[in-house]
Image 1 (tube, rainbow, N blue to C red):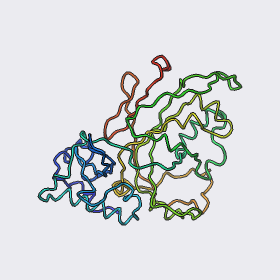
Image 2: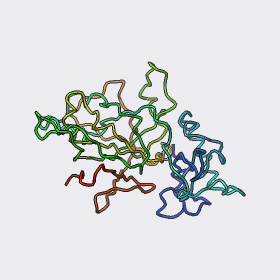
Image 3: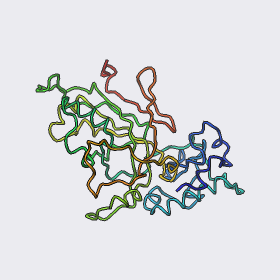
Image 4: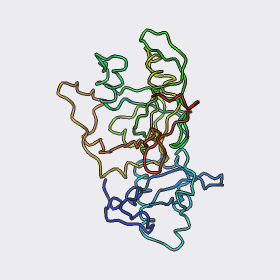
Length: 322
């Protein structure tokens, strides 16, 4: 539901949020987990302009887990409360602000598990060509969500150095392999979702209620060692090629903030099968979102707030592919 928090004319008493080029205007209000540099206490913050609002002190929301465990109505109410607090100044309110530059941004929350989906037809087709050039899409792809479980323990916050993995690599499909550093290290700009409040084991969530469990989204880099993946991914799928690192943004964007960008999903081709009833999506269950990866001239990719960047830490400088 679009409400006063989405008003394009709404401004904050935090002046940096009102600049035309602000990454974090008052209409956005993403959450982040942080600590002040030199301190141990972990806090929940809300980005506003170039500042972070301490949500625990100002709004009584101490942890990201509190947001994720809320039903959608309470998450909406928390956003409205934050918007009201940041649009109408009360004496002393600025004492709960710190510059983003003075904060250490952390993983938004502990990651107990995560699943990686082939959510894009283009992505699934491109990856499928690595293994089946003549028939990249297997028959099940257009019937059900295709996914695999990744390694939750290697999810890191954006900006964390990533070491290039070693594994078995082949020059011919039949082998033999050699043990070598990856020379086809790939980055994939994707959208990550945080789920909550969750469901008891064995109790399914009907698709009509699924969105109420999507607490927020973030940018995600699904690191991939493509040359290792080609050899080891037969027949069961990714292992070492995909489990060495997954980088995510520290910023969690709420679905409420994305409401102005809600739209119908892309139409299915007439030749595609119709979804089974338990997977039939709602008519307006998509969002218009553009993701960007910014690469520097020397081939490295670096981190900046508000955008998606990555960085590789190599075992040796000469391990880079040509």
